[in-house]
Image (tube, rainbow, N blue to C red; front, side, top):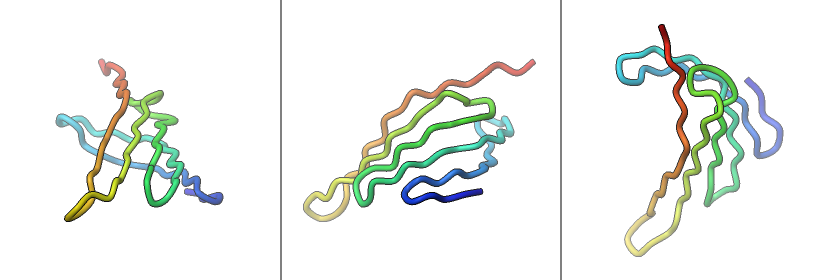
Length: 74
C-alpha cells in the first residue's frame, strides 16, 4: 500500500485456523536485524510481532516474539 523510508504499510489476506482474515499491517524495518510488525486493522488489530535475525556460526538464528490478539466472530 505504501512505503516511507523503513516503514511499510501493507494489506494482508491470510487463513488462520480455517478463518479468513484481512488486515492492514505496519512493518518497521531496522535491517538487517529486526522487523517490528503492528497490526493496525482487522481481527488481529492491536497485535504486534518482533522478528529478530542474529548471525550465528553456520547460519542465522530467527527469534519471533509477539502479543497476538484475535477478536471473536459471531
